[in-house]
Image (cartoon, rainbow, N blue to C red):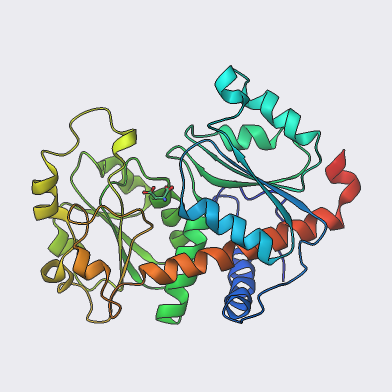
Length: 316
Ligand code: ASP
């Protein structure tokens, strides 16, 4: 069982065996989380600070629950109300927090690369909870765990990722992870949101949902990232739904046992039909949320083991 990372900044630096280690440990945390008594002491005595510079409901609460379940002291910094508003730079904020000796820093930031920068300035382990359109590693890991549990494996699957790929950190982290595990990836959406240049990454690209979904084992829908768009990427939401929104008819082109995923928050009636999203025979969207807590517990547990194993090097 090896996991050699000091931080979890993205999927890019992870080896397939490290991904396997993390998912195996997360499986055990699913079991723990389903018990009435959910407490472990893996992070006991450690301090976890959640710094969210961008709004979040599920990711922030998931990290908070994960840390508390493992016995950490968890603090949520409200960055809306913080000194960032008074003009403090990201680095000054990081140095201030660093002086309080946190062990785990969970950071979400609207700018790609901001979390990597911050990690260079602090002594603790840093987890990227989503930076701009760059990476969202715990989302890809929770998606991987959901797929592995539903399909019994995480390799040689046909996986269709559909919708707003261009602005999505979820898509980027998922493509990196699913390729490392040797799956066949198709990206489906309008060229404005799925730039043809992405073919260079060894994925297939489709502009037609029915073609792109043919024989898919997994159909992953993405939210339209309106906050990251600055122009006319789609003609209208109504037309987008007609061509690219997932409904039962389009899903019928996938394999009969294909699962439907969405990272949330969902725009019902824009990228996915609401009834399909709630259909427990096809949709694993609620499982994704459950796996999120377990994966975050596993990630923080593994990083804290590395912290404890190398105290002198890490505090240098
Ligand atoms: N919650 C995911 C993220 O933070 C997906 C989304 O917002 O669409 O990237």
